[in-house]
Length: 531
Image (tube, rainbow, N blue to C red; front, side, top):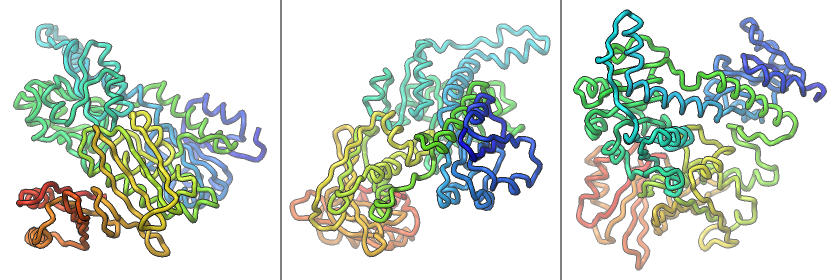
């Protein structure tokens, strides 16, 4: 027993998790506390365990004067003010792996139920009708399963589908080609390739601005006639109006949905369609998953309070005091460089991330900066939330190699960070540094060309033949399109095949504007990137 340390289990978790904590701490279970009681008593505890119902606001966290760790028995931590917790030095830990098997199995259950019309046949027979000929289905044997998103759950689904004798093709640009080969899964170069090949498509993408309505009218039009759709990931990934149109036209033979853009939901046009089966967000709802979440979270709380290794912390770990001043200001730069390098890459998978530190930074333990790069590379592209604790493990799982290099001197700067993404034999490198007493992040190199531009939220990059008039043509088109250029820089080193122009704007640059410029004589490539 750790004398004096108290733990509050505010919501119901597995009894085995509660018992684990009781062997080490003074534990109170506050499942039945009255409203307002938590605010009055939270200051008595060193740790609190919650699920999704308890909202730990900044005010509540401030009242928890003794709090050292918050345990969330599940994946999402939207009900915890992470900024307030981190400011107070409180570890927030969750159980990201607790429901993965459950979600994968529910995906397969829905797929089989969809292909064999199980819910419809059950409803018919239960209501007194024997309609054997009406509910004939299809076999999944030797069918092609298309997996969009090849993270942990996507891979579990693929492994199980192969046991049914299915062929599996998957698309995920954030997984190395080697990882696909190891699992015997065909790597698609694009989602369009999945659409063209798959008899059944299952979604396992994260929800980001880029993936919302990933399956829309255009996507359905590219699919095989009679395709079936399964979604146990996130409701926002599918444009449900477009899905309804595809079902009504016969393009899509059936759909199985566990998640919806708004929940709870009990009425929707899709719910009355005979070729649609639905469940009320049951992907993680197994006894084992719920128990596993409680036990894992209890283990994390135990580790946090006894000096052990907390493997599932979702907020940034504190830097060693001697490194904070030197490395802290460069972490945002590293994250943005990782995101930018990934956005400029052209391949369908990532094989290797190379990070080079030059100048004064080479004197420090830069592993945390490399983790910041990985956060930028992976953020928004994995099923789980990416953080400074799990980013290396997520990269390793995807077969992405990570390498650090250090040079004691930098040709032009006191400190320099260069990030290279190696994909299918091609390399894209970007570099940056900090300027001024606050180390304001600046971008200083892209595509091998040097310049100096303060980091911004919105960029456009162009490669073109170095000849007169090119800058003016770009500026004219931006003006005609009504897009304001905040700043611009050009890199045109002697002997380089192309010049590079970089512009920053106060809003995202439309793709049609980029396409219009790239179509001009002398322009070879253009990219719009929002960080």
